[in-house]
Amino acid sequence: MTRQALDPRITERRNPRTANIDLASSIEIVDLMNGEDRTIADAVATQREQIAQVISLVEDAFRRDGRLFYAGAGTSGRLGVLDASECPPTFGSDPEMVQGLIAGGFPAILRAQEGAEDSPAGGAAIMDEHNVNERDVVVGIAASGTTPYVHGALERARARGARTAMVACTPVSEKLLSMVDVAIIAVVGPEVVTGSTRLKAGTATKMILNMITTGAMIRIGKTYGNLMVDLKATNEKLKDRSERIVAEVCGIPREEARTLLSAAGMRVKTAIVMHKLSVDRTGAEEALAAAGGTIRRVVTDAPPPVPT
Image 1 (cartoon, rainbow, N blue to C red):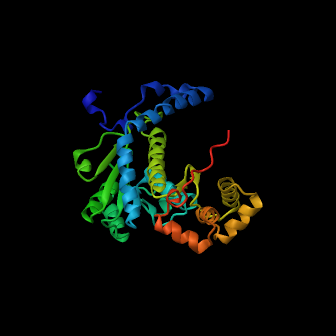
Image 2 (spheres, helix red, strand yellow):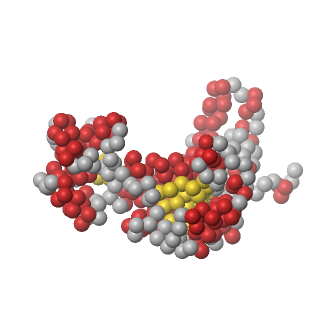
Image 3 (cartoon, one colour):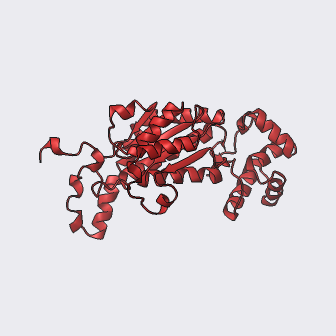
């Protein structure tokens, strides 16, 4: 086969390093996959400036009461849904702030919906359904860069005035580039199993999405140092984490931290400001609102040093 006959998408190329993987032992398979996975972080690092640009776009959207939408199909769509669903418990954010949209809708999260990804009209329709507008950011996710559903979503989002970005793992067409403000192209190379983009491409995509939402949330004041202070304690694990954070930051016993959290409506950030400023819940909430929700603008001292 000539070079010209090869699929131009790197995600569809065969990996020469794993050509005989079907003859490998279990430990050899692990070593082959681990060796391939070691290259992913470097590929993502080549896109550091582009990822930072998207973080800034999303920060600006959040500050204008806008939203972040992910649009994808298959693994890419599921990764967008995963990242979006983890923001509320991690950052105390409204579920509307970050939304994952997947071709085929909710059933596609659990089982492949064949053909749904081939509809650009479906991608466009979901943008209309969610009333995407100029305050929003839409990030299309497609490892191969060719998913029609994603193209349709990005084209309609741009027409509706939204800022747009793309996450892919192979160079994309000029047409697609014209639809986005920022293109994040992390070329991780051919997969261990040819075309199985749930592997290296999926890992790179998850890393990038984690950076986008975490970075934007940090920028709007969802952390105090590296502490997760805007979470709401809605289960036992989060209650335990909340109490530990308040006790550490405020330098108080665990029992006192528990009482303080109760008075703060189980909001860590509010509890910290209540203690630091010696105010009630209303006073703390007003101070935070005036400071754009950032503790550092309310409380002048830094978080306690990391224990060694």
